[in-house]
Amino acid sequence: MGSSRREKALTKSIQAGLLRDPDRFKKTAWGRFIAFFTVRRIKLVRFESELFMKLRREVWSFNEDDYQASFRTSSGQKALKAVGDLGYSGSSFFSTLDGCFVIKSIPRRFEYSFFEADLLEPYYTYMRENPDSTIVWITDYIVAPYKTLGTIFGCTPAHHIVMENILCGQADDPNGQKWETYDLKPIDYFYPERDLLPESLVSEDTLSRLADTFDDKVHLWRKDYVTFWESVKADTKFLQDANAVDYSLFLVRIPASSSPAVLGRQSPWRVGIPSADGKWKYRAVLLDFFWGRHKLQAQAMSGVVQTFNVVGRQGPMSITTTASEYRRNFLKMIDEMIKVH
Image 1: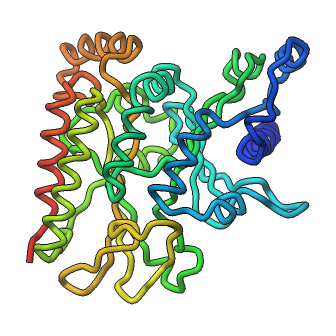
Image 2: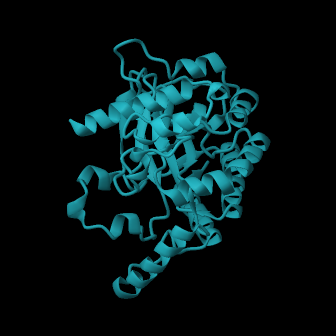
């Protein structure tokens, strides 16, 4: 029951934050005082709203009214739909009821501080210059403008990113049950967020969603392969320059007969590239690039894990590697899973 109340309060906070005009939000001493005692229903506002609006309108061709409509609900409807959480980072995931956008909480300081201080401005510039990038489209970022008891004690996350949902259209597809999803990282890495915790502390479902294997090939015509490969190389170079590691490729296989709609710019890897063998359409995005190697907590944890590795001999690790090494292994993984026709 407590979890349900927390979820309901959080989704309403997120919804209100996305529909609130940030220009009309005024910080006052009284507002800070009242907000401090909030535990669950915290106030959220858009961060750098003009920046994200420019990306939505000028780069990704979203209709702003349609975008806002995705977050509006009728009386009695849930504000958002819970997708679940991965357990280790404490991140919660929600989807809009129309399935077009996903909201992910970022509770860990070294992740949201990396995004705000190191990645946001370069991300904006890069996405303007590369509108068909395979890096996921982040359409909004909402934060708590005040300190509250809920955020101080970790009851309620204060930072949330809004992303395109690469599964957009699945619910309306008669073949939606046949869609396949894969969250892929270089398989040889040891992941401390997974492997340092006893299996008894997490569910099988959580474990099964942490990392996938793809025991097949992505069949591409050469022209599609060249376009995709060049984009992935450029995108991972951008992430390397930002000193990011531990990101993943989210791959979706859709039955070839399906033609699900997507909002905004009709980028090939969001609409779906037909496979060369005629069986599938492929969608793909790069996700989870919030781990900066230079952030203090990441470095501290790296020291702990390096000590553990001396004892456990677990092999190379996602957080102790360099950004260039991670990119090299990531590209190797992608190259090995593609068959060019």
